[in-house]
Figure (spheres, rainbow, N blue to C red):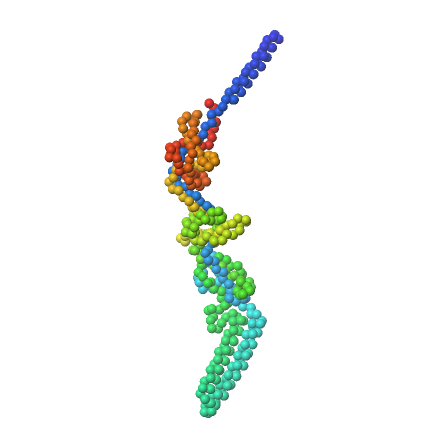
Length: 371
């Protein structure tokens, strides 16, 4: 009985050993590596670059007051359309003490001069009537009298301008009325009723009452790296996409490329301006972030392959062309090729002539298959 169990035990051990050996032998056999097959296609390849920037009005006009004072009324809001000459705000003048005093003093002096000229004229006229004074003297004194009247009128008007900001001779052109200087859309009104404003002068830029722009004349303003700026030229077509408008694609033409670089976080960049076509920009707003795609090079109807199929060795480029075998045993030939334009995904294939649209090239590895 013991002998039986001993034989059984050794039989089981032998079976386990043989089974393990067979398993290891089978799994140690090499697997045949297979690859996906890719054929060249005829396509158009474009090399592009993308500029980031903003959509802006070509001209953004800041409206400033012609006199200092306090805003008493604002007649427009952002988004309103205004014409050249429309009143957009009214200013209440707060006169300066020195200017007011000077204007009042000028009136007093003008009254004294007028009274003196009147008396001189009347005395000369009396003498002229008695034949004791010449006509020339009478006419000279009359002219001086009239000039004195004009001087008083001007002094009174100057006081009115200093005190009220309104001239008696031009009420329509009053400095207290802030008018639009261009036709367009009001972009911003940075002041409120009651705000103090200052007129532009040598020492101050003045307070901006409103910003107005013609929203039918828009440009894209972006930047390009110095390594690509020489590939651009004025007159090149670009496509503008606006992030806030899904699917947007606006045509534009490069108008200006800056002649001098600017430092952008350690990188030299050049400003590029492109004019957008007017009919398609109705939905655009000033300040939209946008990208401009520029076609730097283009090859139409050329034989192309995915760039991942290429293998580089020294200064040469190769692909592997299927040359016999079957689905399990693929045989490839290493062939040197000449390439052209690339868009980063596909590349133009310029040679050799032996590679055609019917050729099958080695791609990525497929799932390993047992023999």
